[in-house]
Length: 103
Image (cartoon, rainbow, N blue to C red; front, side, top):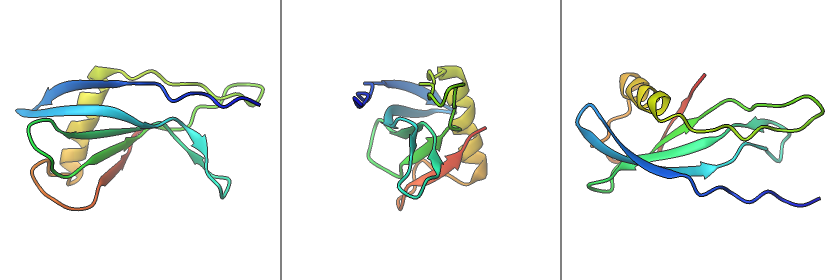
């Protein structure tokens, strides 16, 4: 069985005055303990290195046991960054990455 290559997805956006860049952190996978881990995107400030935001989108399974490779919607991404800010992510703070499970 061949392994799929990780896509090179990246971009920039501005949310509420914060200049941000996003990159694909990992495709959706099954973890070692059998759980499903969805598509994960890393979001950071583009003007300086600060606290990372990880947005995780739900695992999508197709009929027949195959998995889908979700596309990134930039408009939804901006809304999810706003939701992360509302949940407590501070783009100017330091510390461990902040993870938000998106629906």
